[in-house]
Amino acid sequence: MHFNAYGGNGAALAAALVNATDFRPPAVEAMLTEHRLLHAVVTSAEAEELRVWARRLGPVFGELDQDTQIKLVNELLDVTASKPYVSAHGGREPHLHFYSPDADIVSRAKDTTAGGLAMCMSFAGGSRLGRCDREGCGIVYVDTSRNGRRRFCSLACANRVNVAAHRARQVAR
Image (tube, rainbow, N blue to C red; front, top):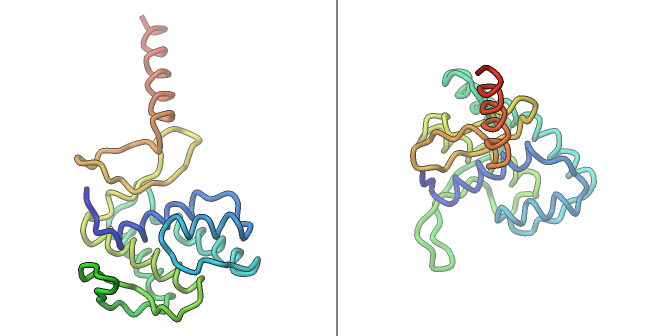
């Protein structure tokens, strides 16, 4: 599934924040930079705000009915200062921005993640926002596979489940 780069980056950043275990400023800065947020310097207080935001993002991922996902994404959009606009800066094709370039890093991250999740819901119906099916894992992901049938966060989790199922079948024989 191809999402436009901006919406996909926002949804991917949302998944990264939910999966993050280290919210010290250097780790948060690296994550924000990896997901193309500019000027991603954060203080300890800002990193803590993003940790709290990540907890709000988490429930959007996983096996939810579409109405619940829409409600959760709309609640995220309600608390952001997002005012989307189209830009074609730097010789790039026109693309959507969800935040003012003058906004602080926490606002930009919130606007980007809420907007990215909204685009994911709008263009893929929310079924692409998954949570690993391996019992005890809980890592979230954005399914960009062609057929949209991803069930696991990684090949390692898929292999663990498949090997366990194979061994269970062997024992049953």
